[in-house]
Length: 167
Ligand code: FES
Image (tube, rainbow, N blue to C red; front, top):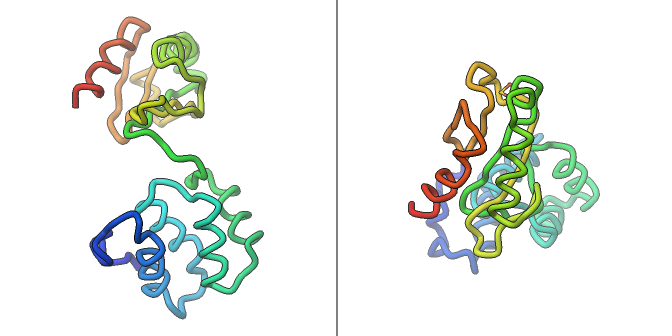
């Protein structure tokens, strides 16, 4: 069940994140197996699951912190790191790699001055890499948030960065 508040309860302020988290937890009250959907809703709200939030969820659900931590670290869908406004996820699967995605990744690292897994200082971009995005016909492929960019070359890197900086 989705929380219906859409971040609007308790004035929707991030300072009130624990009020919002209370609201999410409350909406799953008495439901078995609710830890994953609760964490999913919280991540949707905050963008990541920092340690203090994990501890808070454990306390509220009266379960060990190790259980929450175990779930957060097991599922790749969860992250404990704050992401940039735009998450650039470059495919390093075989079809993309043989068509140069490794070089494209290096070019992003060079131009953004960050490594994979890091976020630019201005909070605009996070650089990630993955294995096969299921769009091998468009190789080499990357996804910025949920927008797919395909048939890329190293020469496209600057214009992609520019396009999102301007948005
Ligand atoms: S290997 Fe890159 S999309 Fe499949």
